[in-house]
Image 1 (cartoon, rainbow, N blue to C red):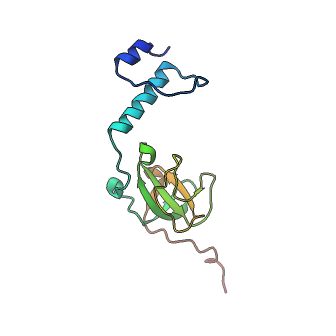
Image 2 (cartoon, rainbow, N blue to C red):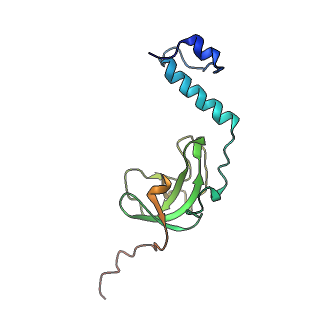
Amino acid sequence: GGLAPNFVAAIGVVAMDLPSTVRVSAATRELIERRELLQENQPVDVTRPELLQSHPLGSRCEVAPGGRRGVVRFVGRPGGLQICVAVELDEMQGDDVQLGGRWLDGVTYFEPSRADAPVVWKAPKEVVCGDFPELDPFADLSD
């Protein structure tokens, strides 16, 4: 069971505008409404790269999984959620790649080097910054 509707009203949670065809339990409705209130009352500054000093903008990095390499383009809380690191990859590699600097919420958080640049949005623990130059696919070949 979820929370009784009168309890939800008693704690001051605002009513959601959901279509009548959408079924949401009282507990789920409360969680969604609390999240929306938090987002409204605590504006999130998505322009501060110092949120993660270990992931400076423009730094070379390696992204898990797969040892993919690229450049950090954004560090912040897209959509007001958890901290994400957006990495413009050197190559289109992986099933989690999208194009451009737009996140799931439809907001453009950064401009990549080109419109069709492959980008991944990852948790900071999946992005290691350091000396990760672009890989040369012909490095092992002799003249």
